[in-house]
Image 1 (cartoon, one colour):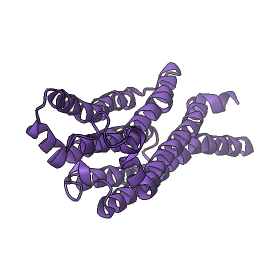
Image 2 (tube, helix red, strand yellow):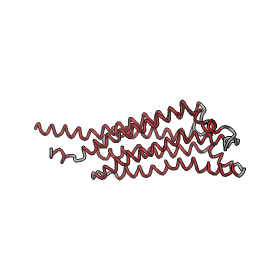
Image 3 (cartoon, rainbow, N blue to C red):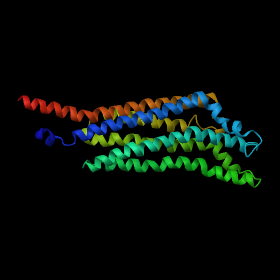
Image 4 (cartoon, rainbow, N blue to C red):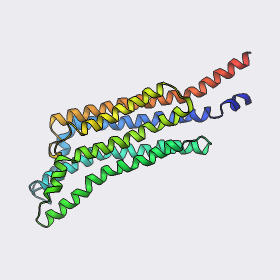
Length: 267
């Protein structure tokens, strides 16, 4: 047994790493599946949530354009921000803690941790591009004005910017466990896991700069809900498969080491 521990001292460490990664991938995929289902089934209900609650003549909901914008922001807050928030929370409480645990056990994980830290910048940028312009809109509405440039931003550029930032941030998060384990095993299946990650995140960025170049007032049309829901399902499947591959490879270190030790005992 001493020989077993001496040969590959990180075998048990990476076995635990694999379990945590599997849980992280499962939770991330559930977030994406949930957002996709919510868009498919409840887009119209969510878009009119503010109007239903407060009525068409109260607060900002009765002001032309501004009321529609408020409804759209409610839609974004109910679907898009949980997408970014859930991704960042899982990356912090599961992935980042997993890498720090590796560091405590003298396993180098600085590159993976750096990717998690960098990913916060574009993910937080999603919230900035959502709420900073709406403050200007509300302020102008209170003063009796209409900020055309800000309204134009939401109509033409918001979706592209939001999901481009999210695609970049998600890629940095999802690729981090692959980077961590590939340095240890150099298994070719991890390249396939990286390809799945690239496909899911590049699809988000591609769609954001293509079919999603629409006004946020049109987020309930069938073209958007079907394409967005499909992309979310694709991201969920790719994420779960990628993390499952990483988890299986991480656990195989201990399995192969046990096999090696058993064979050495039989010599």
